[in-house]
Image (cartoon, rainbow, N blue to C red; front, side):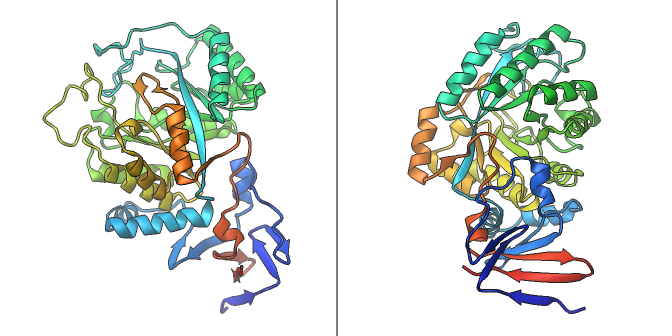
Length: 407
């Protein structure tokens, strides 16, 4: 059956949100990612400015590699266009990350300053008191953060019942402040994930770090499958998944493509994908390697290329410009935002490494014209979609319908 073209000047249809006579019903989408995605379950693709995009889970490595290898100017145009089709590019989520238990980790991650196997500047400390963490969260909220993330240096939560009880108190207290709450606590079982969800946890971070092929060269104490199992437990509990990787681990471009392939072919894309640049720390295997140009030699173009490719293959995912940001100029950071990043960590420290101060980030936001995303609010409807610049192709029953939007 030939496609049916519907053109309406009097109505603007924003997916499932219908606006009569150009009056937009919804300015924001639902905060729950599953509810948000359900609104688009019959959407096949979007197009604007000669670029077509869709949410897919069947990407091949060859397809992703072809995108990743585009000339930089083409890649940036495509990513920026996709970003504008699905997001309000002026809205950037601000998150704060606090190490609530530093050092003493038994893992052998080659990049990590907190491993007991490496001699670094980090000294093991016990888990922070609940009231200290809550005070740090209050200060983060005052500084503009809307998501507060807590990290603990251990392999897995395991049988740490007393520590887990305190973490659940932290989650409840931070949730009561109106902040979104994220944790990164190593491996979780299904029961622990459910308890965190019931306490009010918004998201759980568990990075894959790199491709399955390169992973054993970086970490041997936890398998790739272990990480995927934790992600599945988090997903099954109804918690948003934050999962990304690190550039500068001695990986090849094929490994960067491989990481994106794993993420983009998960049954559900992560709600957030952090892209980190290795901050090399003396005393770690990767921090003490000086003769390998592929280690810690990550520039702004590497970061922008990775962010742009992630934006194209996972268009509804929030892409986070994460560790290593302090080494990039304001102009370079802007390049990464243009590539499709719409989330950052702010605050002066990311676990044990330096990060731009909150007031410095605010000045950068003011220069660019960005605004922070409010806590517990869904993303803004894309202005390009709202103004009728995006063509949305939907599947309805047995026929294809193309709806054209007019400003």
